Image (cartoon, rainbow over all chains, first blue to last red; front, top):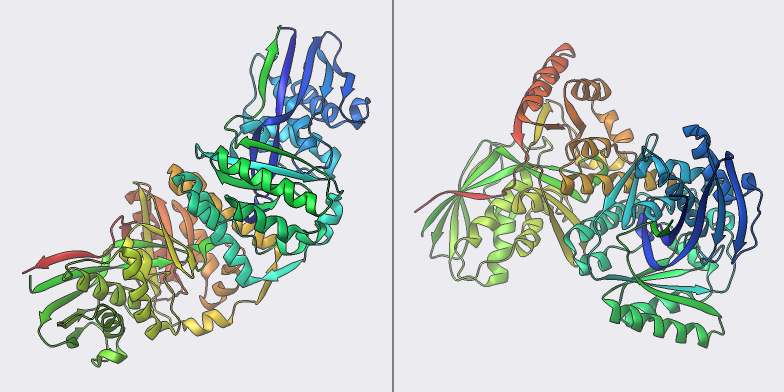
Length: 309
Length: 309
């Protein structure tokens, strides 16, 4: 095998009450990447489409994650990389994580002793850090593992793969505004009430149980976010209006995807997810807000191989 | 059926990172209660052994929970009750909840249309309020449902029954000191750091996943309590010493049971739980602290019928 084309899905991090610990993978929206094995060591990016990103490997998420893996494993070969971005930068559905996860997943296909998903996530985080300033696994982990992932620790990194109820669909709406991750961090309080912290733990526990039980009502009832959304929603004009719209039109849960500006809705079944999409597009239109939208099952799969030669 | 003897188990509430939302039932330690159906309405307490508690129904946990149920259902009969307390009052393993849950479970056996566990829990909470000053389900719910219970909401009351890994054992050690629930509440801060709140949500999520996966390592790694234990442990002299002892001797997780003073250790297997018990008894002895101790599987069953005539 000399060449491989990889799909790397968009992901939703946080999922409201799962702030900083939970994420899930989409299907249908994602980046593609071609890896060509070459004798010279290192990473050479030969093509980038869909985004204005640096070709210099050490400045590019793909390059940094790939080089970290190549150097750690002391590989005596390297790769030419073509990057086809479909996930818009800064849209809040894991664009940089898709780049980081895609390259490490891709390189892994060329190894005699492939790494585990956990090891791949750790390398992917090196790339993610280039884009976001710190190593975190919120988006990288679901991108690699697929489904829902729970990060239960960083030292050492510990990730739990959670079950995905069959009929769980997600609607993504991406309003064309810009939110800087830094700003989204800065708006959060340093302290929260113990009462709200306890409510949040109960909600996340309910959401986890809901995923295991495939109990859609429990999932819907457990996603209220007492700690983060009350602050971050102020960065998205008319957030409450969109939330009410989504929940009125068949959505189980609605919230900010990652640090925004995209918003996600979880629904039971494709039809509900489609109804939510239509209603939200209409709602954004009444506010003169340009947007993109997507409907997808919550994907059980993360990165996957599209072609190989 | 005219007479029934009911077993009502001791319970552990909070379970560290599950503060105010999680609890589980023990086996082997619990109260007994005899209910005798009589033509006159209401509750008459005819005997109390093992504790100095009021015979006046309206002042007794058993009476209040029972009367709430009898009145709500408009029953045209009543009960004579004998109470045999084995769970020490104020020991932190759900003594009042066992009384409250026992009576509502018992009355339910005499109904043509028995109530659900959720309905019973709501009545049990009325009794619990007599003892603790507020209606909460932390101990009542596991007492009635058995196993681990998660309270995901109070308005309306919503309880999720969680799976119990087969080999999960608990060691209870009850040092003979007194902690007032009020004092244990008062020692808690009103505000906590967002960072600790997030860590706590991740831990409880990991614990829930650990129960579903029967992943003992995950259970053990997920029970650290960032919000409550750092304060409440100061109410139990030498808490840290006992914790280290339990974890060194085979325990997966150690913490304060309810608001104390009892402490619980979760272990994989009866042998580990027994080793923990021996080590803790020894440790308390070196501190000249009198104590009782128990080893029990985490029980899948809550209240149960011992005899009926």
